[in-house]
Image 1 (spheres, helix red, strand yellow):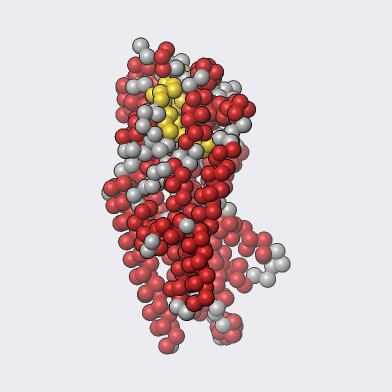
Image 2 (cartoon, chains in turn yellow, purple):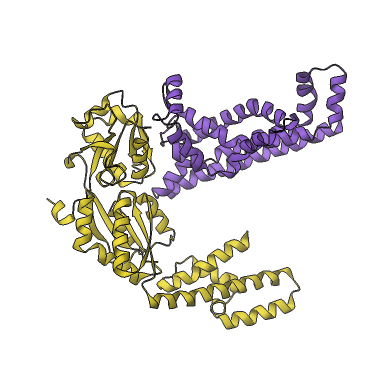
Length: 326
Length: 224
């Protein structure tokens, strides 16, 4: 078990070296284990150490350190290989995207891959979730947050490339029901008082920006107290949508971008929640400081700023920052 | 510290362990002593949750038993609501999900009982039920305790199914594992830390006490 842990950590160390930022927790660890960190990173010295140790093989401690050295040789070779691969192409870009982007980002990525030949891997989820993962060293290169405060926070903490935060869109929330629902949503949020609406799905306000906006809108519309015991919380806005789509919740407050996406477009009706009921859901993207592929990440960010991507985002129901601002 | 979530998890785990003790013992008895040739199929079904990820069970409860399906409509007409987002839903999911953790130790306990003692009891005129309660169950007490403790512990630690079908309602479906997850996602590491520590200590103490008394109980049995 200990060996697996150590192997995992040694695998991570060279990744941070590529990015040029070594997180503080790695340094004391490396020193403690090897006694001399420079030796551990030199494959030849490590080989010599390896031979010496295997010829001795007396105490169990030696066996253990022998394993560690083999491990660092492996890690070092991976590091060298990684930089060579980077010089050839823009490599693989790993993107964390807020769940409201699920369909839009896939289309953007497909276009970007076609244009550049880069590989992009996308993970979607709750923005707050990603924030805390990135703060704890998650290997993402670019982070699309449904709340621009999160990228700003990462920048302030020194965990994002300085000045890279970019407001790419403003999100909207809508009240959504399935097409076969008898709930009349034409008069807006007041219908949620109706006891026939037994469950109302929103994203978790604690860590999902759309959930926070939904809560705010319910409060400002004066229905929050009537609804609060019937709220079910999705882990992110996609799960909230899934709760309504599967019929387990009668209504939901969802992202307009999801409601307009191919998966949900023909499955329900929506009512746009007036924008004065909630503070704008400003979407921000940022380059993660610990990125293993900063060039690729920058290229992707540049692509986000092109008019094509802006038009695509608008088609998915996002307001563009320039037009969205009053 | 979210005592509400801790209390909810305890309540859920106690209910699950209780239901599995009552329902699991006869099932384990049947699995152990039946000579039906297709018995292995039932054994495989009981063991399924060991292999299946919780997301599979969560998916079936959410979509398969949702209000748009026939079984879901049946359930709704019987109980007035669907399974997801209710304590009952969590209970059904947790009982299914912890089934092998109860039935397998029960069954192992029964198997360890000397067949000659059971037959002696029968020849002396005890009924099957009497033999079960006065011979088999006392001799396999360790298995029964282990199964109950494991199903309790497994329910306390349950996360995936609850995340999928719970809907995160405070006091109803927000269990302690979900609460810790939420706190961690929201960056409230202090709160997450406190609850996690309480849970860690609690689990350790409960398991130690039960394993400790279990061992003593076993040595008592052996002396007789």
